[in-house]
Length: 235
Image (cartoon, rainbow, N blue to C red; front, side, top):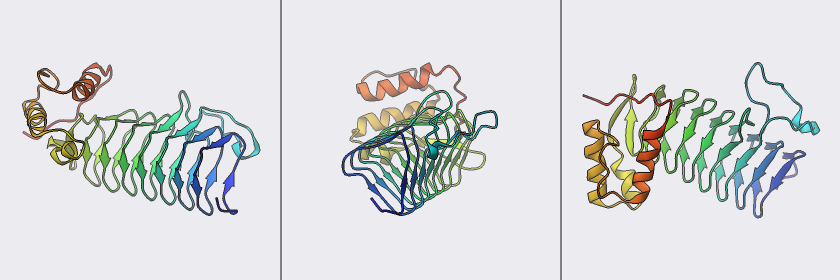
């Protein structure tokens, strides 16, 4: 850890954590094992909500819910992650957050997620495991991005992205399945084709026969969302 970084009260560091110069970590924050934190990154700090108390966490005033960073996650230069207002702000294991990513209060990021440079996640956003968001994607507060979804660069995500989908454009639309991402995740051709047909038919998740449990679980999660506002698909 560089001597020019600041690690405040209430910050717990796992083993093998690398902290670059000029990084600022304020509590309450828990950093997992073998996490890399880039120069100028800021982890912690009050939620950016006008009605929330703006506490001085660097002086030991540990208000708000914690930030949790999972093992083997990489935060590149100038990433900003804020404390939660009603729940912890969580970034899962094995994630890559590239330069100038912004993760707002109460966000939940699953394992193995990639957030490319300039991605911004509004408050209360959920990004499920293995999703990949391209350069400068902006996700509106309280929206959902499903597991293994791919969102193209510059997309303004104002509606929810189904699991396993590819989404891009302005206005954004679902353009079929993320076949490459599913293949990299170890899903076989038959499963990929079945999910592709479901997305194209608009019946997601009506038919799940023969799909692996991990895929069914994500489709069930999508179906059960109480406030889902699904992104439209291309005609």
